[in-house]
Amino acid sequence: MGVLDSDMTIYKDYKVPTSFPLYDLLEKEILSIIEEFPDVEAIGIGTHGFVDSNKGRIVFASDLLPGWTGTEVKAQLEKATNRRVEIDNDANVAALAEAKIGAAKNIIVLFA
Image 1 (cartoon, rainbow, N blue to C red):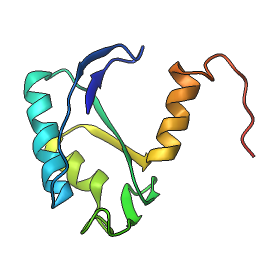
Image 2 (cartoon, rainbow, N blue to C red; image 1 turned 90 degrees about the vertical axis):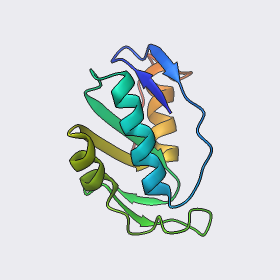
Image 3 (cartoon, helix red, strand yellow; image 1 turned 180 degrees about the vertical axis):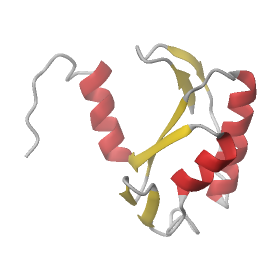
Image 4 (cartoon, rainbow, N blue to C red; image 1 turned 135 degrees about the horizontal axis):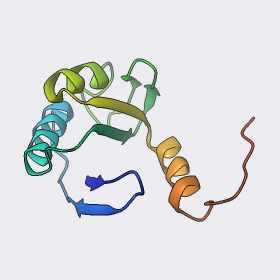
């Protein structure tokens, strides 16, 4: 987990061991970060599994993340934090980060 600004400057990087139920851990850690950084305006999440990014719901996650399938992450976390939340599959989020600040920065890419 980390706190970044719109220029992708990293203000703080957190190492959080995974525990279950995963949503409870996620909410607790994010609320703690918001206490430390109250100006956080939005929350972005990349996660394992099939994600309905429009609804912010985990459609399917393997047994690696027990209880994650069906979790309404966006709705629950927006209610808990009063902040905008976006969620997508971790591979999609990694590709977006590469395009924004990584090896693919300033490269025009066509996704079809």
